[in-house]
Image (cartoon, rainbow, N blue to C red):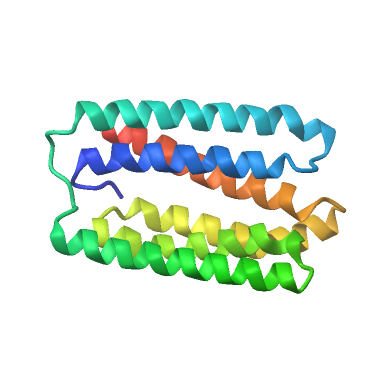
Length: 175
């Protein structure tokens, strides 16, 4: 489940920590009051994990990485496709008056894009995070509706938790 390159695990921790905090933040749009302290805690722990990952990247900078000329180009193409799909889908949903499900669309695109990323950089644990994020996106609307919760709160909590779990795993791997 771990990558061969500890620097890549550290970078993954930093990236997942950053985005985990963003998703916990998105969940704070209209959460139940009882969730606020947990969402704030998730954001803070995600940011601390991001910093730890960043420090580990710096510490392991001389170690190897999966990124070379070919890998970097392929990675860039995958991320570019992700950004275009997320942006176009968000624009279409916004134009149709469905701004409430934009976070779900973006989470779905992010989750799916993590599968090729895991293969490109040779880090199988990212498959697990991709699966969790994709499941969170697919479950967010029915879960939110069944509990009379805002979709952004349910989606942000679940996606933030999945990314934080991946970030913590990656910090441990990098150590």
